[in-house]
Amino acid sequence: MTPVLGTPLPNWTARPLPPARPLPGRHCTLEPLNPRRHAADLYATLVGDDAGWTWMGYGPFLNAEAYRAWADRHAGRSDPLFFTILDRTGPAGVLALHRIQPDHGTAEIGHIRFSPRLQRTTAATEAVVLILRRLFDDLGYRRVEWKCDTLNAPSRRAAERLGFAFEGIFRNHLVVKGRNRDTAWYALTDADWRARAPGYARWLAEAADGPQRRPLSDALAEVAATDP
Image (cartoon, rainbow, N blue to C red; front, side, top):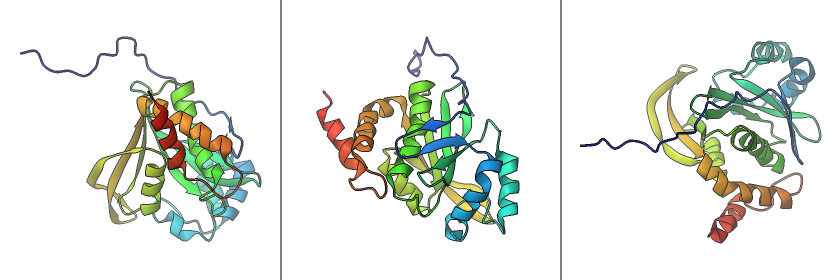
């Protein structure tokens, strides 16, 4: 009996590593993390939001010097590749690409820390879409993952809102700050992206700066309804 195998990919070649180059948008810009330019402002905008560090493997930081030391250790690396999110006011958060596998065309979005002023804004959504465009449209990746603690309800809501598909839970996956972490896995494939990209573009074109006014799910649903 001939074994059942996966879909052949005869023309597949390894994808390039994501470059450390800025990603400009209408509502925000992503710049590679630069401790000299970004660390002090990032610390100032993230300090005091200790609850936001609960789900991270590091932080909160005792002072600006400690945050700068952390930024110095992580800036300039290709994996994780950290970006600073700049809104109209300045540095407002960070995210990173990590677990990048060019041979397979996969990467993960993680290390996400949005300041209180960035949370639930148009710029926050655009920051993620800019990363997805680079991976899928510019570099030809096949899969982008989003993982979080199963108890991290805000992150899980964000993944679902952005159209990432829930793929399951890895039980007893990690030990984070002395606690067990069961990890929820979400992902977008290149086919998912092609179906959703027009919805992201429509929503961002209509959106104003500041708080989100229209659910992204509406725009995604409208595009899905018009697909042949």
